[in-house]
Each structure stands twice: as structure tokens, then as C-alpha cells.
Amino acid sequence: MLWLLASCEQPRQIHLLSGETMGTTWSVKVVDLPAGVTLTSVREDIELLLESINRQMSTYRPDSDISRFNQAEAGSWQILPADFWRVIRYSLQLAEDTDGAFDPTVGPLVNLWGFGPDPKRDKPPLAAELEAVQARIGYQRLSWRDADQALLQPGGAYVDLSAVAKGYAVDKVADLLIGLGVENLLVEIGGELRAHGAKPAGQPWKVAIEKPLPGVREVAHILAMKDIAIATSGDYRNYFQAGERRYSHIIDPRSGYPVDHQVVSVSVLHPRCAEADALATALTVMGAEEGMVWAEARQLAVLFMVQSGSTVEEFASSAFRRLVTEEAMP
Ligand code: AMP
Ligand code: MG
Image (cartoon, rainbow, N blue to C red; front, side, top):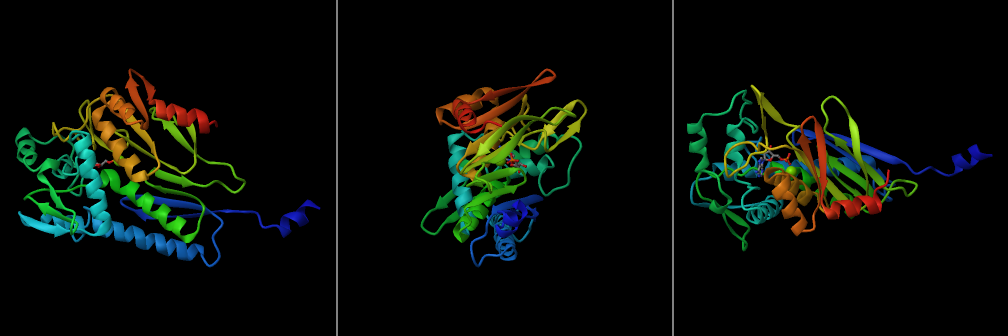
């Protein structure tokens, strides 16, 4: 009497929650909720958390803490709230480690190229406009004070944390759920993702990396994700076209121009999604050759997809290959 059995034993279910944040969507999957925790209360907690992150780090909100810093008077110290502080400190560290390929002060360039809160554009800015903005760029312009978690506005610095904020928010949501006693979960914001535990019957969470081929949706890899995060950057997602050229939303802060090489996407696996997110952006700026050497030196699990004529070639770091072959058979 199978159906009786089935009706006695509640099958374990995957609960799905989703919504919108940071100009994109979020989704959360959880298996089993601890006693006293309801889906409604989880949703409320997640929404409050995301709201608090946006209030700190959204450059799209004129009254956010980041906008307050960006508009602050030259020479003034601004005390930062905890999340903003953590993200800017990590970003400045990564800026140093990447020699400025990743740079949280890239904001004025992002805006000038039409990828920030300013209106979009359909042709590149003038050389004079670029030159005027360059004086405001440079992570070395920022000083901080650990004692009271304050950042100095040197004048005209405009911080943009969009390359890391989504991943950071994924971590915060995952930590919130773990703190509530949820053991099996998948958190995703705008394609950046972190997984813990497993699905109901104990199978791992699985994530597909697509081959970014025009017109076709082909799966390049299926990754089994256990207690790990993945983030992807690339110019196929957000760009504008002027004549023959595609202008990416990822800017090389050293030249002032959008990255212009054959990297279609970079995916990074890391225990924390903030790091995966920031590193994916940093490696996109570096390009496949320099980026792979840099990633190998740090034992990072990364996968580059590079346009080669009409096909896309893959380059995986040794840590990525190890993770994929050991844990990730489809
Ligand atoms: P992501 O989608 O995570 O790669 O982040 C891209 C976003 O990060 C862009 O839309 C910009 O707001 C910002 N950004 C662009 N170039 C850089 C850079 N070189 N370093 C840090 N942030 C950047
Ligand atoms: Mg990123």
C-alpha cells in the first residue's frame, strides 16, 4: 500500500522564495524549516536584510550611505555602517592585490560610460570627458581608519561596489538562514549563488554553467555545489554597441576604457560569494592570460570562456578542474 505509506510520511520539500533587489532578482531554496520558522518569517527577514544592504551600498539611491560618502565634502571622514565598511575594506585589499584592475573608485568611469545611475549612452564619451574623470579615479586616493571604521573622502571620489555587493548579499542571506537553523539551502542574486547542505534525498545542489554561444543555450558544465559559492562576470550580459564595437560595463580603471579582449565570461568558485563575485570581475579586467597566472598563484578555482573566431574556448585553473572532476559529474 504505497500510497498509504506516502501519505503517512511527509515527503521533504524544497521551498522557493523569490523577489527583486539590486536591479535584478533574488531566489532562495530551502529544504525543511526548523521548528518555529515559517516561510513568511523567512521572507520578511530576507527582505529586511536586503533593504539594509541597499540602504548602505546602492549608488542608485541618493540617500544611501554610499551616496552620502560620494557627495561628502573633500577632507571629511565618514563613519561607515558595518556592511559597507567590510565590503570597502575587502575591495581596497583586492584593488591592491590586482594592481588596480579591480578598483572600487571606478564609479565616475562607470557612470560616464553609461552603466551607472546616469542615462545609458549609444556612443563612447569624448577623450576630454574621459580625461576630466580620470583625476577622480584611484583606490590609492582613499584612506581609512580602523578605530572607528571611517573612510576619508579626498574630494570627488565616487565609490561603486556593484562588482561585489550582490555576492556579499548572497553571503549575508546564507548566513541569516544558517543562523536560523536551516541546513540545506541555495541562495542566488542575479546569477551569483551559494549552496549549503543538499537537496531532500541527499543529492547535491547542481548548477549549470552555460556556454555563452549566440542563439544557442548549451550547458558547458554541471557543477555539484556543496558549501561553496559561484559567481560569473562577463561582457555578454551588459554592454552597448556602437558601430562594430561592443562596449562592456566592466571598465579597466587604468585605461579608462571598457575591457576589450576576447574574454566572454569568467566564473569563480569560492567558499564565500563576495569573494567569488569580486574576483570574477577582477579577472575579467585582467583577461585570460594574465588572469590565469594570477589565479593559479592563488590556487583559485576559475573558468575563463574566451571567444576564438566563431567558437568559445575554455580555460580552467587547476583548482577548478579538481573541484569539477571530484565533485561534479552530471
Ligand atoms: P560584475 O557584474 O560583478 O562583474 O560587476 C560589474 C560592475 O562593477 C559594473 O557594472 C560596475 O558598476 C563595476 N565595475 C566595472 N569595472 C570595475 C572594475 N574594474 N573594478 C571594480 N568594479 C567595476
Ligand atoms: Mg563581480
